[in-house]
Every structure is written in C-alpha cells, then in structure tokens.
Length: 373
Ligand code: CO8
Image 1 (cartoon, rainbow, N blue to C red):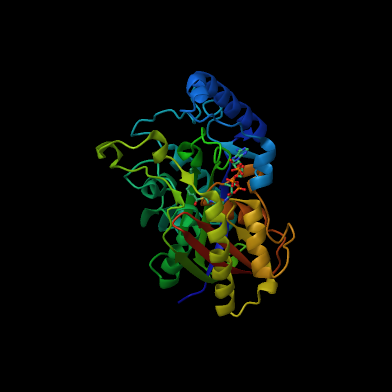
Image 2: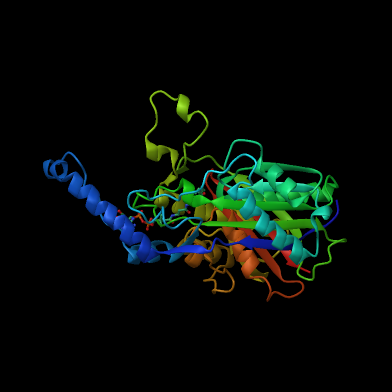
C-alpha cells in the first residue's frame, strides 16, 4: 500500500451572507404575524404562542454570527423564508455542480494538477440536489476527468468518509488520484421558521485532492497517517425527506421533511463519541495527543468543539489549535471541517501532526490523522 497525501484543497463561498440580526429580524416578524393571526387560539389556550429569537442567544449557544447562502432574498422574505433557486433545464449545470466545480478547480490548482490527472471523483455531502444521475458524474464531466465518479451521503461526516474512500482507492492503485467534493446547500433543507434551529446552517462547497505521496509535488501536502470511521444509530438528528414522501399515507407534515434535531442530546452524546474516537485513533497510531498541532473539527457548535478538543488535549485549546470558521459560515455540514483545514494550515511546518475530524447525523464520525510534508 503506497502512502497517500492530501495535496490540495478548494473552497467555494457563496458571495451572499446573512447576519444574525437580519435573520432574527425576519424570524421575529414571522412570530408577530403568526401570533396575531392565531390570537384567539392563543387566548383560548388551544394554540401555543411562538417566542421570538435573539442574536444574543444564537452567539451564546452556538458561536454563529452569520452564514453564507445561495439566496438571501427568499430567506429574508417573511412570506417565503426559504432560498429561491431558479429551476434549471436538464441541459444546464446544476447549482451543486457549479459550486463543487469551483472548489474542485481551486484544489487542483493548489496541488499543481489538472483534471487529466484525476480518475475518481466522489461527491460526499448531506443533501443531493436530485436522485440521479449522480452529482459526482456531472462534476466529473464538467471537469473533464476520465475514470469514475459516485455520490455518498454520511451527513456532516461525509468529507471524512469520502477522504477514507479516496485514500483507500489511491493506496490500492484503483485510481491515480481522487477528488472528494462536498457541495452543501444546507439552506434548502433548513426550517427557517423553527426558532430552535433557524440560525444553524449555511452554504459552501469544498474539495480535497488525494494522490500518492511519491508523485505529489505540492509543497503544501499532508501525508495521511490513518483514517478511522464510526457510526452509531440515532434519531436525534433527522430529516425524513425522501422519494417515498409523495406515496406516504397519510402525508407527512411540511416540517418533517426538513432538518430537525434534539440539539442538547446531540451535544451530550456526540462529544464523548468523537473525543474517544480521536483518542483511540491517535493512540493506535502512536501519536501523543499533545503533539497534535491542529484540530480541524466539524463546525456545528463552538462550545462542542472546545469541549472535544479539551478532552483530547487534556486542557483548553487555544484558538489556533482548533480554529473556528462557524462564526462566519455557521454549520456547513460536510464542508465545515474542510473549510477550517483550507483556511488554517499554511503556518504548519514539516513534521507537524494535525487531525481533521467530522461528525454529525447518523450518528457518524470520522478522523483523519495527517503529517505536514
Ligand atoms: N432564540 C432565543 N431562545 C431560544 C432560541 C432562539 N433562537 N432557540 C431556543 N431557545 C431557547 C429554548 O426554548 C430554551 O428555553 P428554555 O430553557 O426556556 O426551555 C433555551 O433557549 C435553551 O435551548 P436549547 O436547550 O435548545 O439550547 P442549547 O444551549 O442546547 O443550544 C444548539 C442549541 C445551539 C442547537 C445546541 O444544542 C447545539 O449546537 N447542539 C449540537 C447540535 C449539533 O451538533 N448538531 C449536528 C447537526 S449537523 C448534522 O449532522 C446534520 C446534517 C444535515 C445537514 C442538513 C442541513 C439542513
């Protein structure tokens, strides 16, 4: 088995962004309207009044200050409260393809590679824009790569699962080099009318290029020392959207086919699962957790990340040890840990050890331990 490296990463950030204050202003207008429309029921005790959201709560509970989105207008229109995306014909590139392509081009450029060097494309993310053909095959064609491509969905942990699949593929010689692309349009599956989660998600796309160490030329490459994945079934993060929705009798409520979660339970259950996964993985690789210079963690909640890093390090992490991007991006699902990697790796020096760790619905978690070349 040949050693493999991550030789380039790419990031596409939608130019539009929504601040907490803008989001809360729209949500609270919706609450006022709902409560006045249901005033009689609320007075009679048959309808529960909605409570307003607040920017202070959002920052305190999550660390999120804003989010990039593919559409602002629809999300902030109290009559719509969801992104509006132009329906495209079958001959046009899909939005996910466009976003993934932009990230893929940057990863290729950073690695000093061209599409002709790639023969495996994996799209690893939480929500696919359609059933088929696979998003990955569309991106493969748009890039002009030969070989094969496929989609996989392991929620927020998708990028880590994709990196393991790509690393194994390249190690075994099934592909010369592989791209793992994570285009996330979380805004389309978020319930913007639910106070508990309306602030959580944002949109972005990332790409990671994996190739053999011996042929990689990028000065910025990271050798993958090991990957480890873990799943454990839980209904605490769930989305019942699917192709059988139209067939189900009775039909589900509109909000059952959007993201919903028991955030407190997720926090409590995922922190030990992820910290134990990383500790065991590092231990089996003979790496002292204290020697890890950087943790690129999934970006869902700032408190959660600090606690996970603290359990692994045995002390509070400083900002640069576990960098934060969720303040600007919110939770971008599978893209989050890769965005942190993309933005915060240039200062590491030869021999430095770092861990990318992604976790989320399933539950699912993945750890990728790397060494800077
Ligand atoms: N404004 C003001 N108050 C609020 C608000 C709000 N917006 N929301 C809730 N409150 C209130 C609650 O009603 C509650 O009041 P009370 O105490 O009177 O009952 C109080 O504030 C506390 O509420 P919570 O217990 O819910 O607050 P928490 O401190 O637990 O914070 C979080 C909520 C931020 C959601 C937190 O629990 C969290 O981040 N947990 C971890 C979640 C997580 O990591 N989830 C992973 C999801 S990612 C994934 O895998 C999904 C993939 C699919 C992506 C698809 C995209 C759509």
